[in-house]
Image 1 (cartoon, rainbow, N blue to C red):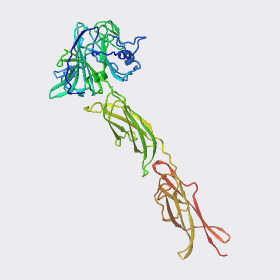
Image 2 (tube, rainbow, N blue to C red):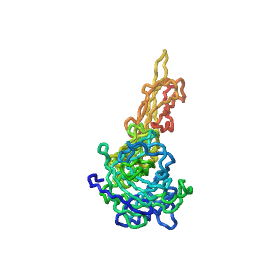
Image 3 (cartoon, helix red, strand yellow):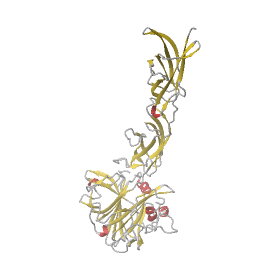
Image 4 (tube, one colour):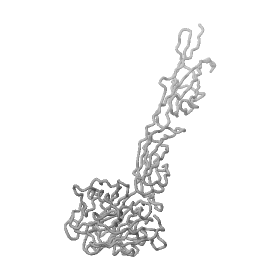
Length: 532
């Protein structure tokens, strides 16, 4: 918002049959009334275009893009207390407690819904509330907060104002027929003094009467059905007595155009009752709830994967797009990508997106290592709703994708050759056999814990095999071995003595791809010529 624009104040005092939360300008705003029924009741009228509160809050949500649901204010709970709880103070100075207020100030339910006007993409915010008693004068206020505002158990409020928060104050007198309305913009604090700019919003309008382009409102002039649980002080349970139910609409986009400011992101809303329209008035009852008008969405894909260079983990590649689906610019946008190990956030990857205008998208991509095969890759986007927002209160739903399973084909081969020799030992001449061979990794993944197994237990290895072999086609894919043994017997043919033994090998493929051994073991036959 422009902070140096002149402050203009117009207090609207009109006699209408309803609550006027916003005031009109001179253009036609038929779309606001056809998107949503603003006729002084909460039930969808057959044959009338647009949603109504029963559809939005209790049904499918209609065509709204965001809704609060029915935020219930239980009797004798959550009221303002202490002198610092005023609209001129920032929210950390407010205090609350459980207690009662005068019946006319007792809010029973509050609700809001955001819509996109299809012809020009305007942001429309519909608000409503009902109260316990319709007798006596009352003053109602509506805050739209950019930050999330909630209650702490110790009687304080969590959160604070952001520049650009909007406050509408309406005073009801003469049984709710006369309405005074003032609209404010929060412009910050200077020491202990607040900067609340009063905004000129033109002349007033009752919904369905005249034309407007910033807003209108209406109340029920007769007894109407309540779609949700509601019991008035006087009347029938489930029915709104006259001037007990209020609804209205804000055209935030038109307000932004008129005052030359950027549409903010709202995260929370509050309906409050007050002692007067004065900014220093004592605040009484309130209903506060979450209300997100800015949204992030995220796509997530994990299309490819492999094994890292050291063959110690799986590597997966991912990509996606983060989109600002709301109406205001989002700030300090990040995407947090989980590393694929369930419950482990230590190695999460943060992608900095930065500022993201309304409707804008930005791609992100990366890779991560995991011990899982396959891995489930999850990401979520977070953003601040304003430049001065304390926390990233806007976030997308988490999105996940199952990365492809990595398949490998481990294999191993072995060869063997031998030769005989005569050895003098203990005054005797004996036959010995020297053998040797090669073990090779013929698969596409490394092998470890390699075990060469001879059929003769008395074998002595003079050159044992290495403990691991790299995959085929790389250095160290093969290794030689050699050894000696002294056979105790021989198979004989005429003129020949034959010595035979068999050797095999086993190995474990890295990354749990299983144990492998050759299809056939290696056998070597060594012969000694015997003279006739």
